[in-house]
Length: 202
Image 1 (tube, rainbow, N blue to C red):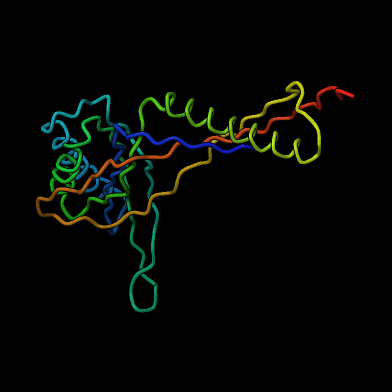
Image 2 (cartoon, rainbow, N blue to C red):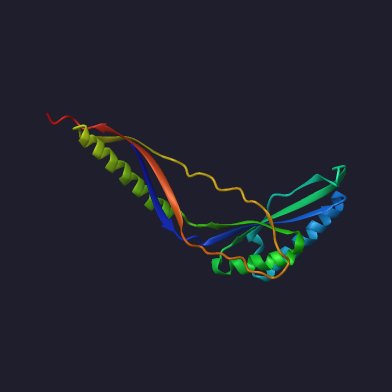
């Protein structure tokens, strides 16, 4: 019998996916401009009190794209990614806004992810709810069959699924604050339990 359960919890960490993206005639110029913009973003993060250990390099790449009316011209695109972990949720919007403004037209915001730093308590509540769901359904079906549940033979817990892939959008150069509302996140659990039939009383 498969059972499902869920428990709500409040996220306490914001993970920001930032990047600088520059187009130029050659790769060296594109990388230099993207690096300068990224340095401005890092400086703004430090000024806001974000520790260096909370910042790591994200997806980084260069590629060429066709331009011009007939697509005969080529230009290089350089993209440097940055992943920032912010543990002050109320201040996260202002911090991200300051970083976006500092990077200018080259900066991109890939997305903000709200994370629960310690999901174990919510996972335990969700797991208990999933067990109770499976047990209640199994008892009901057993009663319909005129039988009684016996010992548990097997328990299997499913793994949670993955997250969404962020899409990058151009940010404005003016000072801004990105809205961040933590709300609640639902932690889900699913278990599959196999019971034996109890001995027939007759």
